[in-house]
Image 1: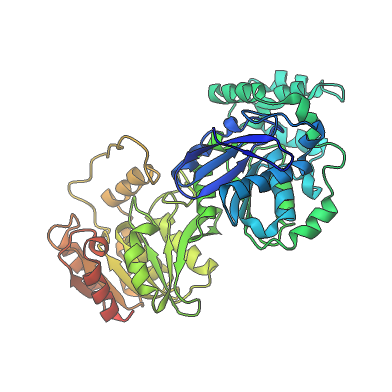
Image 2 (image 1 turned 90 degrees about the vertical axis):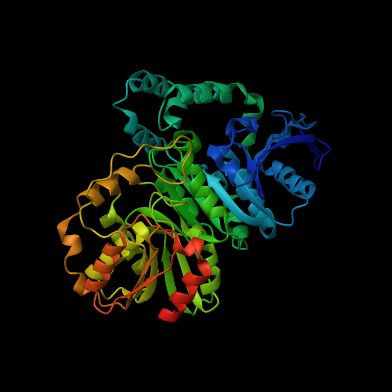
Amino acid sequence: MPTFTTYDGTELAYRTRGEGEPLVCLAGGPMRDAAYLGDLGGLTAHRTLVLLDARGTGASAEPADPGTYRCDRQVGDVEALRVHLGLDRMDLLGHSAGGNLATLYAAAHPGRIRSLVLVTSAARALGVTSTDEEWDAAAEVFADLPWYPEARVALDATGPDTPLSRVCEIAAPFAYGRWDEAAREHAATSHRRTRWEAAGAYHGEGAYDPAATRRALAALAAPVLVLAGEHDPGPTPAKAAEAAALFPSAELAVQPGAGHHPWMDDPDAFARTVAAFLDPAVRTVTVDGVRLAHRVAGPEDATPVVLVHGRGENSTTWAEVAADLAADHRVYALDLRGHGFSDRRPGGYGFDAFRDEIGGFLKALGLTGATVVAHSMGAAAAYLLARDEPGLVGRLVLEEPPVFLPLAPPRPAAERPEGPLGFDWEIVPATDAQLNDPDPDWRDRLASITAPTLILAGGPTSHVPQDRLSWLAARIPGARLATIDAGHLVHTVRPDEFLSVVREFGL
């Protein structure tokens, strides 16, 4: 493991995992070997994790002065690591107790933070703590589970004289969204890797001055993500929201079904949320409780255009098109629910759900009257929106949209490919069922579409019956139909021709 020497001569170790720009990670516990963070739910696919072993933990040396275990006295270790890594500014993540250290570092060195992620962090450094009553009330969510009665009795029996190691061991079942075998093993391993004699000193007297920290954070210009677990008793989502409000620029994300270790409860959800926040090209907006990621480019005051992808794709499919349009448009490329960095919502998929989502996105960002350019599944949802809320859409470009005429023969049940997917597979059976037997209303009232409409067909190599696109064009007033012989993926196979036709249409 690589090492460096910190401000007081102590040799500290860290490990790196993953690919991409570095993300410095501070472990909780407190005073726990950073190995328990693992790959943070697969975040290593997006960033290189720099996992610091705090002084006296893991492969790091014990300090000569045990007083330096105190949280505020470890701020210098984080700064020494930054200098060692050669980073002018860094992305910093702190979990649980490590979030206090990350907060103190941001207060002491606001200009060195590019972004700050606080994961289920009890915000003692800010003076935000949970009461016993709040903790007890939050723990009641587990009351119907078989392990709860015994765990609750043990928890209620703890007191001021109960060793910290024993308290953490007893509280462990409440720290996970699911107390399954994986959680039990993670908790047991983490317990063994904690420097308990140092843990008591971490939050020791004098470690925190919340008022001073709050004042210092006024100089923090970097964005902050406060990520809470829905079922975490400490901090509860309400306490996490209270902490988020104390930063100049912070957003709160609450991971559904998660506890204190959200990357264990739903790795994909955790990695998506953090990766989206850390990517400077990605923004998020919440529509009907769903966090939607989107990429923005072009002048802020330019005419808006919204790009909507097809099934199984995401906003990156529009990269070449978006770069061209951004020369004279404000371009918003959206990840629909279940795709890319946006939230998964099992049971909430379908053309009608995507229709409402696109509409909610336009309203949330004040994009009424924007041009909507959409492909395949997204295009069908877009023309349903233009039909149902004609005032929302200014112009409409539909690339290879499905038409809601029953399929004959119907699509057979699709088989999920092996391996990880960039989207929620549940979308496929949900939308296939609607294509096989669509709501008859969806092919009616197409004359209600008032937006100037261009329908782009991919020609004979497309799986979409081209006569159905002619049928659709004939029913949308004034719609223009153009064919580019590229198959279904017109904008990726023939981007220049796609852009030429779209520009001619008036973009």
